[in-house]
Image (cartoon, rainbow, N blue to C red; front, side):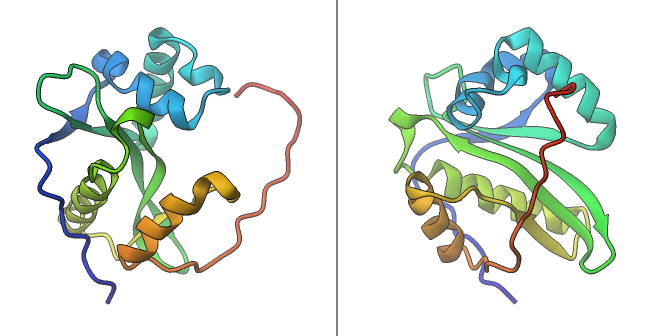
Length: 162
């Protein structure tokens, strides 16, 4: 059993972000996905959340005292996998550049682990991009007890509708 992520002591409030409050998550999501059409504007993100909500996608944010927008955000959903069973999958986990190193992503992972347990999930999964800019994130995931268990392959099919 992987070890649990222990929350940091930095003051923060962690709570879900509904589509009507998409603007609170936008800066942190844009830090991870600057080229996504879904992070171009608050309305674009709200439309994305309204489309993916029925699929189970939800946002949770870590908020610093006195700051309206989330310092860090996670987008997640529950899915059922033949090989892993009921799984909480983290689509997005991002911290604002100026808020990094304060334990927000670690606290969100701890919250997500609790949420996965509450939802009776067998596992918690996430994919993380590769490259020089991702090393700190990968260290965090390893410290959280997560393992590299697969290579993720993709095949672009054209621009289509994102």
